[in-house]
Length: 319
Image (cartoon, rainbow, N blue to C red; front, side, top):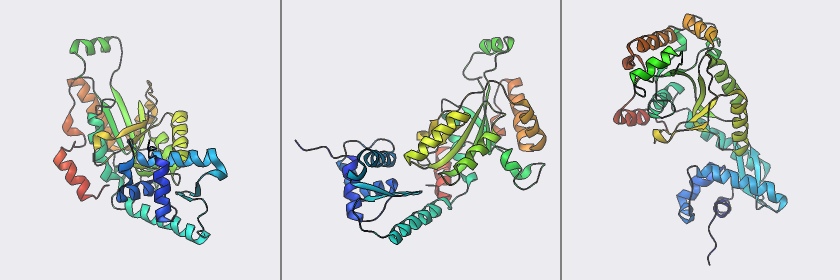
């Protein structure tokens, strides 16, 4: 009986053919290019992450007996053990990966990603919310860097009007039960070790007023060591992590759930109202919507239909 072709086999075949240090993502792309992916029984949703995990486990468990060796941590680069590449060649490979990553992430800006999140959280069953961009440049405080640690990039609100009958919401009101949820979102193009703590604690600082706070990115490093640190920070501080999928926005996912806070930080919320005209408008709209028991949809960021969405990611070269 023929042995099953595995991710380890795929890694070996690609690295042997390329004879150069590669990231898990580069290994997978090269495997697809030469058709090795078709030999796998299943690839899962994130094959690059699977490749990285298999390589780490193989090296950890087998030590010097492993066929693979990791030659760089950031970015994570792997090659076959016994390869006679010189240190200069490895450094060149690291530089090449860094340049390639910079080219990818410099074709669009963070605000170009806002429509992606707006579309995702409006239909996702966890959120079902309307969102509004907070423009930092409109703030009353113009001190350089001040708003970075005060204002979230986007805010969102979930209204229960479509999910509960009027009699139910009236009872909730009588019992002082609040089923409205408010969200804070900090948007980044990419999450990796280089800026993890800065970005994460920016999200912590900017979300204390909300029921749930999230750090959102289009690209998240699939290095298992990075993923472990991201999960640890999320568990410790309650910030959720969302990974956007530009091509199939409904396949975006909450990779770390946020910790729900029942009590709003009213001091911080009031400070935002005083400082940010956009946030003040958002809060005013929430109050108005509660009064009329209907979301004022035109007061929030536009939810792009499929045609507009496709045009947006194409025009902005978001990949």
